Image (cartoon, rainbow, N blue to C red; front, side, top):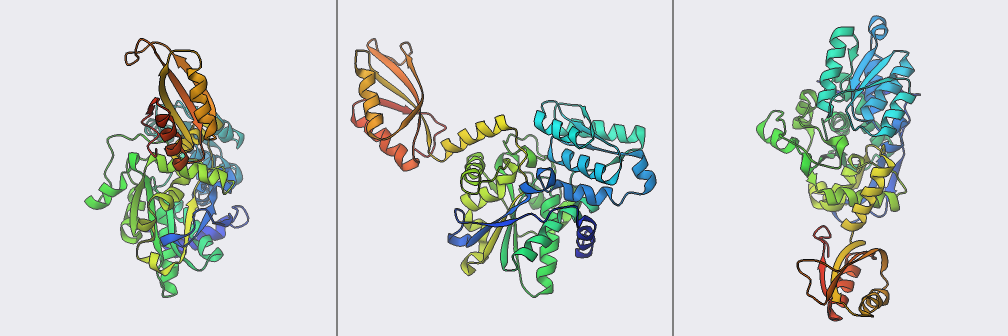
Length: 417
């Protein structure tokens, strides 16, 4: 079992190589039961995530003969880059197995740190199987992403930094996949809090579409999911790790889940208000603060203490970023998809556009459709994608279109309207 002395030893090994990432107050997230909210910006860490901490702690402890045989890992992105850089720093060769469809920027970044990338399998589980086969045939040391004593201890150094930077912390919110980061942070802060006779609440956050932990904790052992479907691929882990599980079961106060809409809304808020580039998994803690503040705060809410949301990573494909920002705009009520039926005669479209202009909407896309099952003989359908100022503005615009005599349909994805 990992303890505070292991984490302190890891911090000593990492000192001078791993950055102490900033802790920044977020006015946009602060208030209500969560009190003042601070962002622990691990997206600004070397390689763009916390993963370098555990990887470097593990590889730095290898013997000379183990280093000579090299290391191997499997990952779709963040762990791959962490292992690649840690190996370069420690002077050992690294082979990284990545699944088909892994983001090209993540492959390129991993190779830029000096690792050899091999594409294997259609998902991380299949890539891991290939990595294990490689380890068996070459004697390379397998560096797991979370289920390892040294990995958990390395990730726990984030907790030491948080309490050093903000001693008044009362709640820490952490994204949760395999469990290495949450287990390490919980071990560090719970132990330090006990030394000073105080309590700190620790909350894990999963995407509700990839949530293996609630059922596992209820059952009392790691339980594998049958399937997952979330934008937060960095925390889409089908089965909790055995080593993290015992720590999390014993130390973590609560595990909550967040919707896909909350993830994209948090990503948008962090981009706009905090000026941070964040991947969906990295935004999970902020999403929980936004969507479930009372659950996050728990009994600490009445004390109005300081809450820290760990922004765990920022490695995101620019093309995916564009899609997710668009999804976030829709989830925040600032991007609206409408279908409006209008009479098929000159000036009808101009009349609809006048209504939209009068209510300060910005048209992003428009198409004119003359055929359809629901259209009358003298009707046309206008498909509109418009930019608004938020959910209240959306409702005002839709009401105005209806009041002008038009039949309007709002696409199902725009739930806030």
